Every structure is written in structure tokens, then in C-alpha cells.
Picture 1 (cartoon, helix red, strand yellow):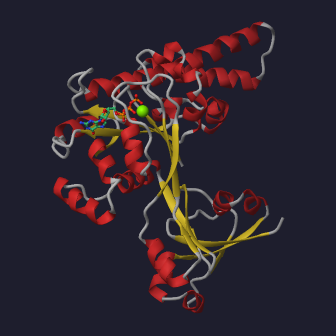
Picture 2 (cartoon, helix red, strand yellow):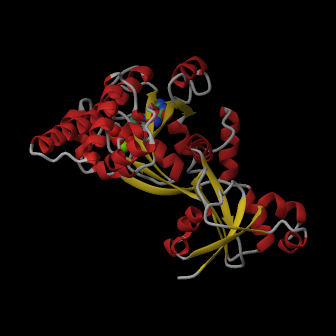
Picture 3 (tube, protein in one colour):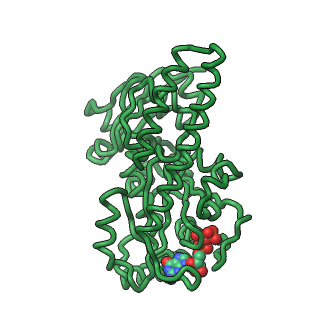
Length: 355
Ligand SMILES: Nc1nc2c(ncn2[C@@H]2O[C@H](COP(=O)(O)OP(=O)(O)OP(=O)(O)O)[C@@H](O)[C@H]2O)c(=O)[nH]1
Ligand SMILES: [Mg+2]
């Protein structure tokens, strides 16, 4: 899973990136238009990994991961000015979800926070970027058709794009539009920005953190939202765990920024984790809810998907109830599943394959 942090200049994207990744990327009071993207992988906390590690005593334990990308600032009017066609485009397009960091603290230059206005502004930028893409493509299709290229595929693409254009013109993101399978197929290559899942991170000043219920309720009418005290949480991420816990308790923060974001992202993006276990490694893997055994195999390695024969499977809960893998077999919980088996959260898989 790849999540891109976007937001207006000085909204605290890099601060939050640092809090999440324990990195030390440059945080500045003034936006640097030439700044590069910061990229890091964060692991998803999962208590089940502790029990599995106890049981298998592997050489290493690896959590499921989420890749975080901190984009340089997004300037007003950036869709028109080509922000989404610049260096960042590839990165932004490759993400599964965009997380919009919204300033909810006073800034000497920009003044008091205007979170609702900021959310609206960026949403509009994203809609506009998609709309430009749609319109350019529609023009091109018209050009092809004028020259006698009239395939069914082109006609279907045109129909889908017109539907999308209308939807965008009514200020609605593409992720809310119902498209049938064929329509989905024709537009997949565009990687529209408003088709991506969208999470709002309200970045509150430590003084007001936890006191923004009304604001959060209003944002929630349209978006998934989570509140962080970015600057405070960046400081926390530099302390050792015990020290951090004391400060977190004081602030009424139950879990670390990383834990909250990864769990929130998992939930709202509909991800599930399965496990692979053994003496070498115990590992959690994140896949989309609804993914099949062969998708799961592919998450581990493309060879496993290509040569997939079957998946041997039992569940984490069965293992814990039985106390050992041997007992799981004795009790008959051990299953063999084919390609189309829908993997569930907590499945422990072993892929049989041949290439
Ligand atoms: N009070 C307060 N200030 C914050 C918070 N988060 C960030 N800041 C301050 O806001 C300024 C900008 O923070 P950055 O993290 O660099 O913001 P950014 O969105 O990455 O900025 P650009 O990449 O330049 O657009 C810095 O001076 C931060 O210390 C916060 O939660 N509370
Ligand atoms: Mg930054």
C-alpha cells in the first residue's frame, strides 16, 4: 500500500511524515518549491506477530508495510500550472491513497487556520487535474473519430469519459461514481487522482488537539478523517518508548501516530493481513479485502502467483486455540485452498507452487 501525503504549503506534511517514519526530513517554516519527495516504509503494528514470534521463534519477524511519500508543496492553481504533470506526477499517480494534511494551527505567514476552506481548495485542485485529463483525452478521441477511427473500444472510452466529465463538473470525485466493469477497464490507465481513496489528516496544534469534535464531524460528512498533533508527535517519535508514553498519556493520545494512521488506513482502504510462518521468518502481508489466494501469492513473489498450485491454510485464531501447528492438523483445521479462495484477515498461508 502506498499513501501520498499532500497538502497546502506549510500544512505540516513533512512534520507528519517524520512523526510517522521516525525520519528527520527537513521541516521548514517557508515552502521550498524545488523540494524533493521524501519516501519511507512504515510497518503496520499487529499484536498477532508477537504471539506468532513466540511460537515459531523465527530468525526474523517482519510486519506488513505501508509506503509513505511526502510530496513537496502544492501551490494554489497547481493543476493549471502543471503540478500534476511535473516530477511528482509519477509518484502521486502510483499511490493507492492520498492523505491530505490540513493545517489546524496558527502560522505567522498564513494566519489562523482555515481547515474546511483548505480541504475544499485541494479537493477542487484534484477534480480539476482529472477534468483536464478527461477533456484532453476526449479531444483526442474526437480527432481520431474525425479521421475515421471508429472502434467499439474508442466509443466505450468516450462514453465512460463523458460520464466522468459530468460527474467531475458537478464537483464529485470519481471514487463516488458507479462504473461497470467495462467502463472501469477503459479508464484504468488514467490513474485518476479523485479515484484514489482519500484520507484527511487534521494537523492540530497541541493546544487544541482533542477539542475539535465539531470540526471533525463536519469533515466526516464527506471524508474519512483522523486528527494528529503533528509537531508534538514528531517530537514524541524522537523519544524512547517509555518517555513517549508518558507524554502521550498527558495529551490523551492513546497510540502513536504511526499506529493510528496505519490502522486507520487499513480500515478505510479495506486492507487485510495474512501471515506466513516458519523458522526463518514470521511475516504479515497486507492485501486488499477480497483478494484471492493467487493475489496473496503474488504479494509474496510473482513466481508464487505464476506457478501457484494451492494454498495450505489455517487461521491465527485456530493456531492460538490449539496451541501448536501440530494440533491444528490433528483437529482437522488444516485446509487446502485453490486459486480463487478469498483470503481472510488472520489467515496463515503456505503457498505450494512450481515454476
Ligand atoms: N503549531 C504547530 N506547528 C506545526 C505543526 N506541524 C507543523 N508545524 C509547523 O509548520 C511549519 C511547516 O511544517 P512542514 O512540516 O515543513 O510543512 P510542509 O507541509 O511539509 O511544508 P512544505 O513541504 O514546505 O509545503 C513548520 O514550522 C512546523 O514546525 C503542528 O502540529 N503544530
Ligand atoms: Mg515539506
